[in-house]
Image 1 (cartoon, rainbow, N blue to C red):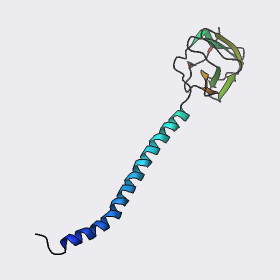
Image 2: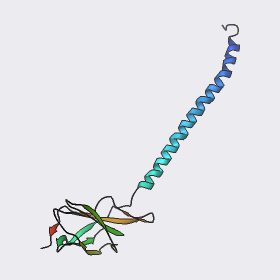
Image 3: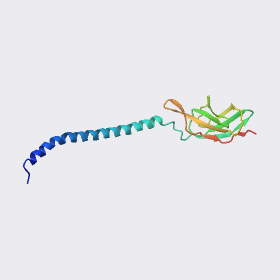
Image 4: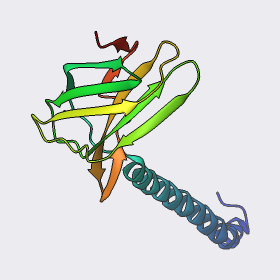
Length: 155
């Protein structure tokens, strides 16, 4: 059945198989560890990049945002969760500006009334972006809570 020397050649080849198996196992272990580390680091990155929780933020006109005598008159009411600050985005044909309003923290039900100096030359966009404390820092939400596509006169 067996050829002469067949069994001894099988044992000899087992010695050669041992380093091959060890190499394959080491590579498989390294790939598995790499996959685990990449998965873990991706979840860390998502947590670090995640912004403030802006769900539940709601601002309404109270009564309006309008333009009069070189001033943007802002009168809004917070109907959602508490806001720690407000940034006003103003854009027209000439420029895009952002103005961080001082003392603009709003609790639920609070009103914000501000006048911003501005010279309107063309159609003007105004957006109010709330900011919320997130991990000890004041961070703006990604989207405005209130937008006026075309600023109107207060009359």
